[in-house]
Length: 130
Image (tube, rainbow, N blue to C red):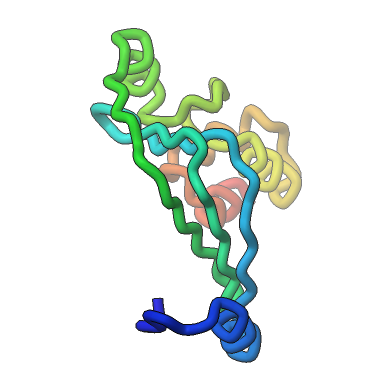
């Protein structure tokens, strides 16, 4: 990371802490990166989270196994546009619907319709309903 070939790991950790970088080793069983055509699956991977300046960065070290999407997985991905969370709100998060309904003082059906007509833009949906 910092070109510390041969640097003492304890000293490296101390330097990172002084720079405001917090490093945490995560105990994970599996890491899955879902892509359009296939998945990368890491079993027994080493995962490190670095917190620096309000941003979290994850580093995965391991050998991935490539898994092709099955027909069922591909159909779900195609039908939901990649969102497999199971919500049936047309891709609009339920939390967004509730925010618009509360701010505009309308029911959730009206809020959902406004969000759909504004392509999910919360501010435009609220302005449309007011």
